Image 1 (cartoon, rainbow, N blue to C red):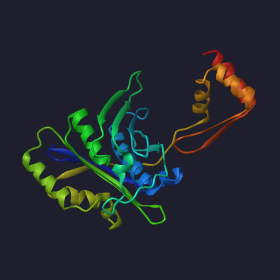
Image 2 (image 1 turned 30 degrees about the vertical axis):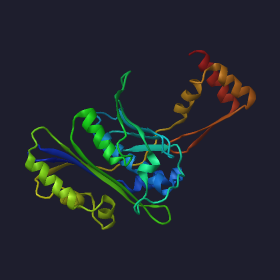
Image 3 (image 1 turned 135 degrees about the vertical axis):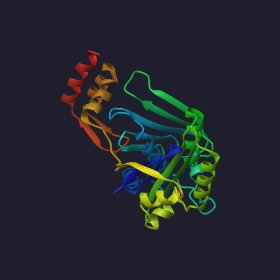
Length: 292
């Protein structure tokens, strides 16, 4: 089972999150039929979004990461809730690039562009923060977003290990955020710990769980694990949502669909679930559209 720990240093110098998202990234990869580099890019973004979601105040709020860049992957969209559950998709799931220094070329697949974080708090206007992509490796770009948009110095590591059969062997990450009052000694000790660590996926494949990774990451610090979460790849699509999407097309376009096709099939971008609407259903929706 996937897991994320929320951690605070006992003297209030920093907070941290440690995540194992192997199963949810595996499900996303399977749903979308992702190539290895696409799985790495979407998986890193899903993991970051899962961690971000834990800061939401209520179940009806969401946070979304949107990457719009000029690389062959195209856009990447992920959405998360306050339990760490996430869903996502990308424009081109079958990108195949040569390895770069023996590793998946995520930065080359992403390219240059913008990273946008949208906090939807149930109000008319969501909070939107946008930064220029720095590396395309996702983790560094998330850290840059926190520094520029929220003035919060952060260390972010994200990883996805794809097996030879394209299944996800390991996925996860961690984030450390310095809080006001963190001294140079704290920063130096954290830097030394991070420098000596293997990658997240190496630690996971070496049978370290999130508690074991936290112990190594925060060696020498007294900390409390405030909460443990069990995030999932979870979609909230429904017939009602798809009906609203059809109604939003307007009465003229709905009438055209009825006249030309007599039915409509919609597919959820996040989970690929298909919804079929027959002619009588569309006629009922047309009446609703006329009243809008």
